Amino acid sequence: MFRTKRSGLIRRLWRSRAPVEGDGEADRGTHGSGGCCMGKATKVAKSNAGSEAELKALTHSILKKIKEKQLEVLLQAVESKGGARSPCLLLPSKVDAKVGQQSYSLPMLLYKVFRWPDLRHSSELKRLSCCESYGKINPELVCCNPHHMSRLCELESPPPPYSRYPMDYLKPPDSPDSGPSPSETGGTTYSAPVGLSDSLALQESGERAHWCVVAYWEEKTRVGRLYSVQEPSLDIFYDLPQGNGFCLGQLCSDNKSQLVQMVRAKIGYGIQLTREPDGVWVYNRSCYPIFIKSATLDNPDSRTLLVHKVFPGFSIKAFDYEKAGSLQRPNDHEFTQQPRTGFTVQISFVKGWGQCYTRQFISSCPCWLEVIFNTR
Image (cartoon, rainbow, N blue to C red; front, side, top):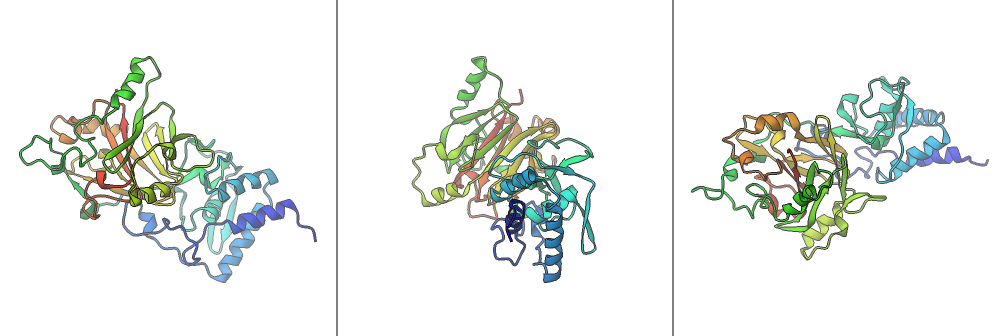
């Protein structure tokens, strides 16, 4: 019997489904304990033979109803793990599918099969701004591309005390009992980083105003110039197929540290930084966790700043416009000492810092970013 192209696409899609716990192929960064993504603490048991066969039959029956061109779009997204730019996969949103006693909408089923087997409810998801269905409420056709979605990072409440970043460290360096010097914290807490004038000069030359600038650091050394961001979305990556944005792999670094080189190679697809109506979101596209410190992620009354762990495939609102306004209090060292371009968010790839790690300061992390927001 000759196999059709459609059946071949369906077989390849099923082979590319997301592994569950016990398959031996699970993403190294998929599960873990601690951090801010509470959903990651839930282990997914390997399906029994009956439910696996039922899921396979249901998935095949649904895929057979999808047009061949749409199957190709889905396969491109799934096999590239979101690395390739794939268009939206618009399908009816009101079609329900049932696995055992559980009913799922068509989009939810595809998200579970090809991205997150432990997904329980659509409220755990956030649509990426690049998607045609972004911002639309109950459309008849909804995008079902699994890589146009991300998981919402749920902040722990209350946060674990071991990840607290003492406000004492934020005292100005000329204080009698000051904490680490600016060089230990990356030089960003008390003064604008060297080269900030690169970005400010863009405005003076009449070019379109930037909404943030990004600096890439390896330990205590900044690598390359500041990257000024005008577009609403920016990909920051080391190796991304069809990548367009801030490519860290093209920067010239003199750092010979084996750890830096290892972490640099693990950045992979990196992160996506997106300015949205409610704030700036960070989407972890890589295969490893990232770590974020931002004043707007914490309780406004807190005397500590937390370092938050964000797992692969998760998004977090790293900068909240509304909270930022309320945080500009005259007596807060953290905010009165910020660079004149606005607030700063620090992001480390792979390695965390703080009191629960061997690295106390972000300047000890192999590869990290600072994102400086222009609030003027």
